[in-house]
Length: 255
Image (cartoon, rainbow, N blue to C red):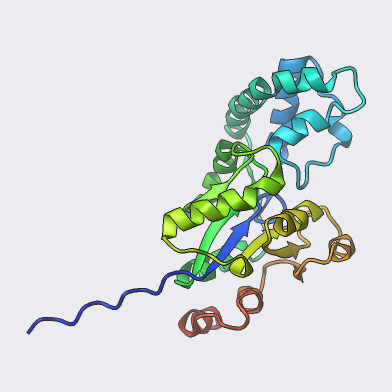
């Protein structure tokens, strides 16, 4: 008797694009130290790095931003930016040899496990990190394995240009055309909310970074969560209550 054909998994319908810093992980000191060293090595100055807010900025944007109002002109900063970012990655590898990359934020592993088990969800990154910087942050914490694709500041220095890149890569990886109403940008700053809006996607804010919840709320994201520690609830809301029943039941099993 010929066995019946195996059921073909339904293609994904929803695209979840995660920021990294403040959303998936709380980064440690190696990253700011590496940036400082790279700036000094390239320009002879770290500019205003001590007072500069990294959250929601792309790595190329940070290089220009720390020198605003200093003796390093925008022209000089731009001319040295590629060399500075290359130096940053080299120094970061040195720093991470001595210090851990940070800690995984509450609920992150659980929500990624839950989403990865639902065949209707495709997971990707949308981050201001360079692609190699993202790998260096996520691999030691065993998070990189969840993401088959992403969009990074090495693709474009302007964050608002990244949603289209991430969506195109998702479609190339899955063979699925994702409607914008089924695409979600998940981040912890107003810049992530603005990025989602610029790309025509749903904005999901989590108050796990340095931006207060009230400030995030003022930017009117489509969804706002304190954290990601209740994966079934979070994903159920994003997917309109249509989570896969098998996955939902497994998520709700007592530990």
